[in-house]
Amino acid sequence: MSLVKKFATVASGTLMSRALGFGREMLMAAALGTGPVADAFNAAFQFPNTFRRLFAEGAFNAAFVPLFAKEIETHGTDGAKRFSEEVFGVLFTALLALTIVMELSMPLIVRYLVAPGFAGTPGKFDTTVTLATIMFPYLICMSLGAMMAGMLNSLRRYFAAAVAPVFLNIILIGVLAYAWYKGSDALTVGFALSWGVLAAGLVQLAIVWVAVRHAGISIGFRRPKMTPSVKRLLILALPAAITGGITQINQLIGTAIASAQNSAVSSLAYADRIYQLPLGVVGVAVAIVLLPELSRALKSGNLIEAANLQNRSVEFTLFLTLPAAAALWVMSEPIVRLVYERGAFAANGSTPTVAAILAIFGLGLPAFVLIKAFTPGYFAREDTRTPMMFAAISVAVNVTTALTLFPEMGAPGIAVASAVAGWVNALMLLGVLIRRGHWGRDVPLMKRIPRLVLSAVVMGAALYFAEHWFAVSLGRGSPLVVKATTLLALVAGGALLYFIAAFATGGADFGMIRRNVKRKGSPPVKEPSPDP
Image 1 (cartoon, helix red, strand yellow):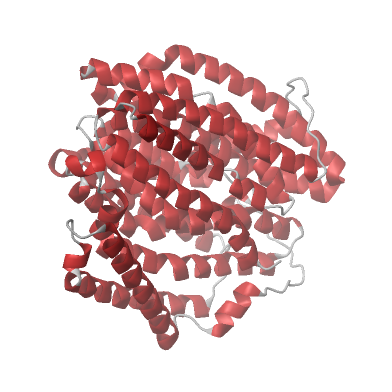
Image 2 (cartoon, helix red, strand yellow):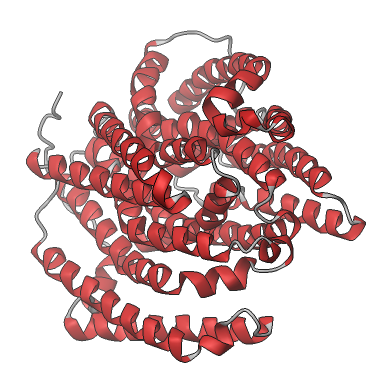
């Protein structure tokens, strides 16, 4: 299966999840707007979700996958099964202990870490504590699920792991639809959503567990024991968790800072949902597929194939994310107006703030995606320390910038800080890969990048003038069908213009597409010793 076909397999599941996520957020915005319950739910959900991405997706996609791939290569399925059971025993025990501690400490965690700005509003603070307490066990389900998803990805079975998150949105949409039908108040909706999150975690875990059994690996529980393989995993996992979850760390910091201002937390969450569509469909798909593929190439000594994988991944991500970034920057307000502006959201007058945040996130989108394309170059070589150092620098940049800009700009200042930190991190990752000789010099790619940027700028300029030309159709008083039809037509026209410009300038060609769709292997070439 070609690299792009594998990307497409993962992206299709992610696209379903993100599309349903739009539906979920539209219903939530109409039901809760950017009011106190929306702030409380988004802050409470951000906490277990951040832990999930730090200690589940980040750590296991970065540390577990290369080690699991090595077990398959050296000891076959039996060795991989034994390793998985050893990890499962330790992981489950650690997660259970962590969940108990966190549940007992939740009031302190919310007061001093998640949303310190809520402490001055007792009702909002108490609601956030209760919702976070309900949702935190979601971490156990998703962490174990992430481990099994890593196994499936290493076995090149991508779809089940990609489609499982769809059920979170299906369940929450069902909760919101039922609440709307019953005419529930905002607080009741918030509690129902929290129980829905926990139920979704159980469903997602069941899906990947069944898929792993279907793949021929049945995981049994072993008494927790620190075997050499588990110790190696833990050594790699801690820095990998921080690195893989850097975007989520920055979001958690942003949420804590934003909690000092009413509606800021929910405004950031609503904007985040929209820009997560291209980030998830392209960036997450590339990261999930590239890591096991790159690990296999390096373990077999195929250096040429490894370099080709990295270059084609960057080529693919930039080709798709540059126009998405331009569209988010130019069309943010019509997008927010179409997706969210109804019910409580419209009554709160939240569109300008959320649109400003979304536009800024758009500028950071290429960086966020490139980070996911660059980090497998380290993780596949079992170097998780270097990306962790860069992640720490990125967090420092984010905190400093956010604290500087928030008093004057409010929530958009936090978005600026996140985008700046993303670009700093991406450039550092690329620079060291080049310095170590782990990034193959690809002259055609270097020539295409500025041409793709130019094509995206041309598309953005055309959308800017078109938006003003159709201002009435996209405006607040326009019927929903008219707004949706006009916006979709502009997006389709912009995409067509981008592709024409990209091919006309040489930013893309049919040879590039053929290389990505049908990739041939290369003869093994010995990999130089990794840097310590």
